[in-house]
Length: 104
Image 1 (cartoon, rainbow, N blue to C red):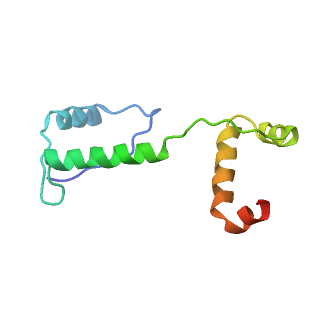
Image 2: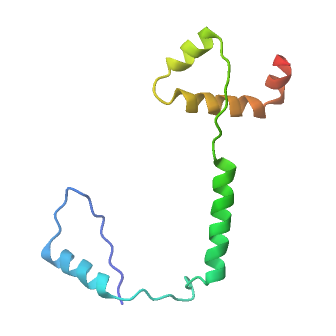
């Protein structure tokens, strides 16, 4: 079987031949092979556990933080999403031992 690929763009109208190919492909069964075997229930459960753990590790937490008026004004001047920017700045600073020592 020959593999055919096309780059579809939302604004491009499909030809009748392309629509037929898509329709035919939709009717074919999904077949696993040695390069891409079907996952077992146990393997699927492992993916779920890993993704749950990762989600928990990255779940943001709400905290109260007191900022100087100037710091808040500067942060807000960054525009929408400034709290995410502040979070990334803080994470970066906390990874740098010299920065931490400077402010202790």
